[in-house]
Image 1 (tube, one colour):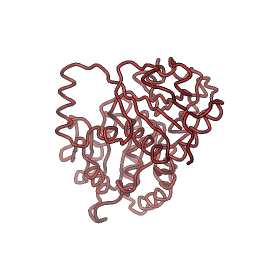
Image 2 (cartoon, helix red, strand yellow):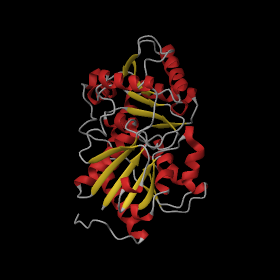
Image 3 (cartoon, one colour):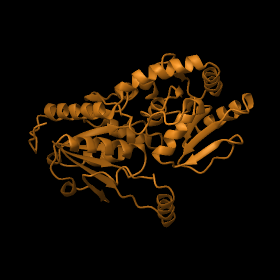
Image 4 (cartoon, helix red, strand yellow):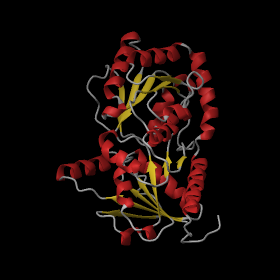
Length: 355
């Protein structure tokens, strides 16, 4: 097959995921391209991004190291997209752009990675378009159906690379609680800070740690270890030093840090914010708590800190659960979904290959 991904930019977890899928399809013998929107930004933003790329070597490298064809665009045109079996829009804006392309550009597919809370009108507009969908979690299927979507929807879970994420420090060095901080409302930044403050009050000597793409936020308890844009090795070591990992988000698609923490040997407490319920069965391999409930988040974290046996039970169950979330399995599922979508469309393939 010939497949073109159309994505909104180079940064963020979505770009990382698309790089994995595009690379995997390429390795399986398909033609796989990535087009990314080159948004116009101010001089201040350009200088800030340039500084971050120099200062933090981990920033936005996933797409840039993709070995296949990749190109920026200002306006998405039929000539740029060309003839494909499938053209995949990632995010509402890109989905609305590909919807305007002529039929010869390929079967249009909406690849949804989560609710776009800051872009809801366009997201719902994209959901109303008649096109098949590949989504990252089961809760998105339910919400799309509730919104009247009757087209085919395929759920393809993202993976975690166990060569990158694994327990990397001795077990006797594991102590404390960790999280990822993000300033967006959907990530619950004030909730995470409130939980950390309560944990510090209850157990002042317990290590607290976090990493983030932001500068150190105000309001962290004293002594909290904070890393900004760490490379994978540093993030892996932070996961591996934590007993418990917290996800305090209000809305997520399929949060990678939950899988990464599980892979590094943490027990996890996560809110019922979306894809976390595909990753965690409450009381079996972690705890699921209501969104916005600081008291329950704090209580469940302390329960695991104070009951090492329960924490170890969750870690063992997570190890079994992680077998569902490998990149080879995800890429195979993505390929299977693409083949089914193209076949159901009645479209002849542009490039015939043997896989």
